[in-house]
Amino acid sequence: MASRRNFIKYSSLVTGSLLSSIAVSGSGNSSSDQIRKINKGVLKLKYRPYELQLNHIFTIATSSRKTTPVMLVEIEYDGIIGYGEASMPPYLGESHKSVAEFLAKVDLSGFSDPFDLEDIIQYLDTVAVGNYAAKASVDIALHDLIGKILQRPWHKLWGLNRNKTPNTSFTIGMDTPEIIKEKVREADSYKILKVKLGRDNDKEMISTIRSVTNKPLCVDVNQGWKDRNMALDMIHWLASQGVIFIEQPMNKYSVDDMAWLTQNSPLPIMADEAVQTVNDVLAIHTVYSGINIKLMKCGGMRNAHKMADMAKILGMKVMIGCMTETSCAISAAAQLAPLADWADLDGNLLISNDLYEGVKIVDGKVALSDLPGIGIKLIESHKTNPT
Image (cartoon, rainbow, N blue to C red; front, side, top):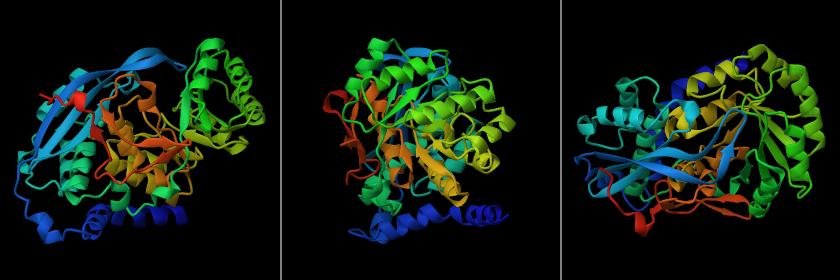
C-alpha cells in the first residue's frame, strides 16, 4: 500500500517536473527572458527513411536479421536543428510506411514554442494510438532542440551526475561457436556481455563464451523458455556461470509463471517485452525484479524518465536499453544512464553505417559529454537534408 500511495503521489507531481527543471537549469548563461525572445518561431518537421546495416547477422530466440529500418527526423526552430530517430525492429510492428504515415499527420503549426514539450507530446498521442517509435523520433528531436537552445545536455537539465553512469553491456547474438568467439573478441573493451538465449543450444552458447572469457554476463531470453521449472533449473545453472541477471525468460502473457519464477530465482528477472509504456510499470512491479526501458517502446525520453522514476519508487531495478539504432537514439537514451542500475546501449556499435558522432564508451562505461541536447553531431559526409 505504501508503494501505491507513493506512486499516486508521484503521478500527480511528475507532469510539471521536467519544465521546472528546464527553468532552473536554463538560468546559467542565459536568463529565461533571453531564451523566450526566440519564442515565436515555427517548428519545422522533416524526415527520411534509412536502413541500418548490421556488422553480423543478428539472431535472437524468435528471428534473425541483417538490417534494421529507421526513420531520421529533424525539427528546426529559429535556425537550430534537433535530431531524432525511430528504429523499427520487426517485433514492434512499425515500418518505414507506418512511421511515414504517422509523421505526415503530425502538424506542429499549432505550437510556436518547443518548450511546450508536455503539450506537444500529449498532442502526438491524439494523432494515432501506438506508433511509439514514431512518437519517440519527435520526442527525441524536441529534447535535442531544447537542449541546444539552452546550451545544456539533458543529463544536466535533469540534474543527473554523469559520473554515475553504469557500464554498458555488449550484445552477443546467437551464432556458430566460431562466430560467437569472434564477437567476444570484438567486445574485448567491454566489461559485461549480454547473451541472447532461448533456443535449444543455450548451454552451448554459454560454454562457448566461457571458453574465451570470464567476464560477467547478462542473459536475454526474448520469451524463449516455455516451462517455468526448466527455466528455474536453467537460471540456477546460469548463476553458477557468472550470469548477473535474466531478461524476459518467458512469454509476457505468462504472468503467474513469471511471478513464480521471479520469487524463486537466485538472479534478478528483468521485464522487456512485458513492459512498454508508463502505464505498464505499476501493473508488473510484483511480477519482475526490474524493467528494461527503451525509447522506441515507450515513446521517447519524456516517458522513459517517468518510467525510471516510477520503477525506483516501486523498488525495482532499472535498465536503460536500446534497439539497433544510430548514435542519435543511443545518445538520447544515454542521457538517462545515471538513473540506471544497468545499461545496454550498444545498438550503434552493431552497425556499419552510423550517421552521427555521439555518446562514447570509455573503458566499458557510458561516458556522457557536455555537448548540448542529446549530445550528438552529424557526420560531415551525411549532411543531407531530410525531405
